[in-house]
Structure formats: structure tokens, C-alpha cells
Amino acid sequence: MAEKKIEVHRFPGFTDDTCPREFDLDGKTVEILETVENWEEEEKGTATRHFFKVKGDDEQLYTIFFDKKRNGWFCS
Image 1: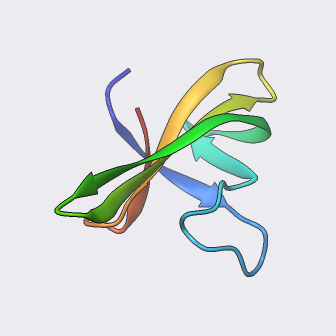
Image 2 (image 1 turned 45 degrees about the vertical axis):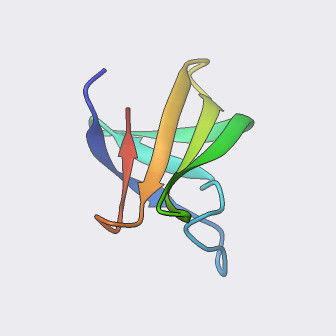
């Protein structure tokens, strides 16, 4: 899948390095049922992307991430 910008829905007070509760992709909202894995990519010792491999309510696995440089969420 090509990288796509997504909108995320988080619990109030949570930060960008916390897994969201759901996200909008291709006109549908996917509720996150489980976080399977999470990790960070670093550049010059600073985390630039925080990744989450998640299972959606549609039984699909997704890799979503917050990109600090672009200040946004994406699905890859």
C-alpha cells in the first residue's frame, strides 16, 4: 500500500506517540481493536516517526505512524 495521510481519533489528553483509538482511511473509520507492535525510527538520535502495527475492527492489519517532521499521521 502506498503511504496515505490519515485522520486519527484519540482519547482526550493523549499525545502523538500514543496509539489512537480509531482512524479514517479511504472514507471509512477503522476502530483499533489491538496494538500488535510499536516502534520508533530515529534520525540523529531523535525519534522522527512513531509506528504502530494495529488490528482494525475489519480484521485487517495496518501500519500507521506519526511523522514528527510532517506533523501528521499516515498509513503505509
